[in-house]
Image 1 (cartoon, one colour):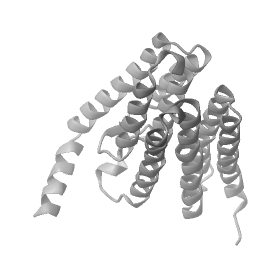
Image 2 (cartoon, rainbow, N blue to C red):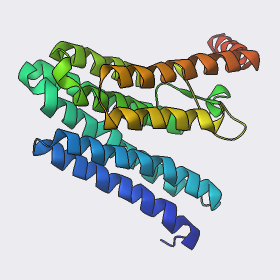
Image 3 (tube, rainbow, N blue to C red):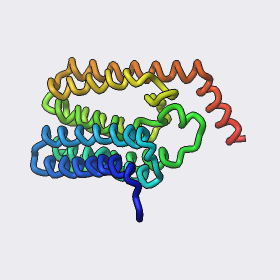
Image 4 (cartoon, rainbow, N blue to C red):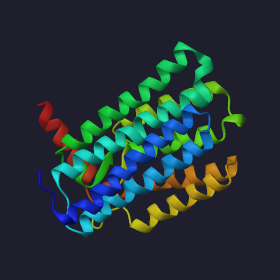
Length: 239
């Protein structure tokens, strides 16, 4: 198997994502839950960077896409489920284990659906919550676990699992598609502030921005006719 030199850097960043995801699992197993969140957030930064590097270097490939999905499953599917189970859900026994298990299962379905999606609307928006965003909500609940009832976190875990396999339209931030990239960096900055100062206030600021982005995305999709086109396509397939 020969790999072009330009492909090495983005693939190395993707492998760093997997490494950080594994370290996040190890930290969670040791009871170091805040450290686990730090490792997994670093993995998310790698996930953000590898695709941008691949496009900048004209190094996009089927191999890279498959490797990226596998890394996402480790760092944002398995690792957050292990973290939230060990940090919060374990006292619920078999029910807590089942709830934690649902999350990576939905994550796997979400990634498979994304990789096989050939719909027109899938080119301009994400269908279902991307797995790194879903994972960030699990991390956030772990960080403020002392202020939340265990069943609230259990419900939040199931909600994020369901969001991944839903048809919720979550914006893309690529040039010519979705919302301006600066809106994503505002959300990233809000999350970093939350990580530095976990509180109800910083969480609501971050989550509120996310809600605004989804509302703006729906408005833009409607204005450009994408929602109507998707509805028409569904009717044609059902006919």
